[in-house]
Image 1 (tube, rainbow, N blue to C red):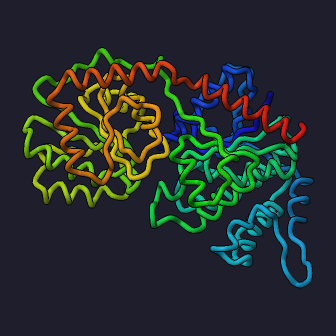
Image 2 (image 1 turned 90 degrees about the vertical axis):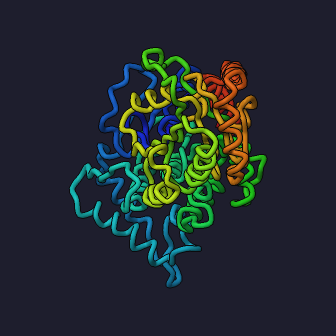
Image 3 (image 1 turned 60 degrees about the vertical axis):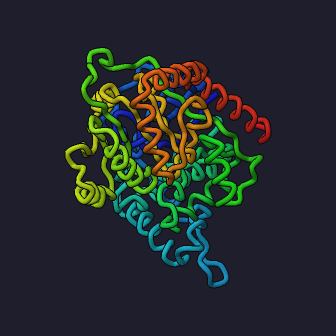
Length: 436
């Protein structure tokens, strides 16, 4: 069994949970004897693999042949005065005019034709202003690899890679499975980007099967995008339990309690609810420090809010943590981890906190709460209840210890190898359905 997998980030170059999950899924599939060809926008900084069943390809290293470029140029034809274009572009119809889409896509094709043989497209794998253009270019890489690679099935991770997966499906005829780790509605709420939503909807609708990381995400996709629930399989994320960097070498502060928020400082993660709860807690407990580890667009607003609440001596902003060891150190120092997400498809960080014997408070609006039943849960918007839960766990060591033990017991049955086995079974089911 061989899978052609399209990702966007991968350790050590990660900005969030997507890269961590992609790594875990890859390892789980390899454990289940699935050969993985993993495609990324760029493989720079990723160490060579010694696993003969894993092949990592950077899209920025692929030379596109002249024959392929000629084939690509024929995508555009004139018919009855209307320009017809690749089905890859149709998700944009409701947000952009067909003419606008053609201009963007045609620019890429013209750029390819201006260059010589074995043309290489540029990629950064970042999430900046050029993201949509990179998604377009990635779709071309998908089409090319659909013709040149040997595989049985295609698997993509989130909206940035769906067009690439569909491109590979179009040129190879192989089934395509789209995995959704987070929707645009999770990331942006009511401010969701229409273009991304349309692309996300189209990719999920065109996929042969969809994997959701939680029932929370499955229900959201059914509600927002009208997908048939029978088309969606839920496979929960897992966590590496064998890596605990210097956990025992860091002593906790016995005089003070540290409460940790770790993640992107954006609307989705609920950092504003965390800071409001911190203010209430500090009115009752004076020996607590709150740490917000991460960066994001809400940082300036929250720094101002901490100042206006006069809690800056007890509320600390670390900024983005640059490496895994910094993240692990933050867990090891903490007495409580709070995940107040407004909409959290899963939340692997909760697993990681438990590994470090850190009790957790989870938003009820999270996927991870489906599997960590022993964790304390509150609605993200209920700040008084969140503050009360923080005080309760900080003051009651027996309760905190019992929670950690219960969650650790639940973790024993949560493995990436199990997730990989479920994905392999899904691959076989889809191949059988496609008579392949």
